[in-house]
Image (cartoon, rainbow, N blue to C red; front, top):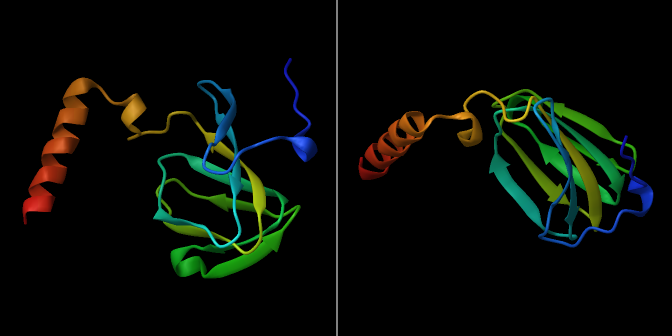
Length: 126
């Protein structure tokens, strides 16, 4: 068994810390300084975000936006676009499952990766 005291977890800004990673899930601690944004993105895995300290705003397409502080839990479906904005210095945990999710580059064969790169190049040229 492994355990962490997440209330006192030391995480530097811009240096996500992977706490655990296996086939079932990945857990990442992240420090987001006040005023910074994780620009709109989506991931291949189902994701749970837990605010440990600070305050942030989450914008999630049709779901709208929500502001939360320590204790807030948010869930995103695989492929759901979202943006995270730190209203104050914020420490959070991300749980991604399964790891890696379907379509994640880490779960793709070399042939699948080549196909994705080719499609991306075609889109960039058009």
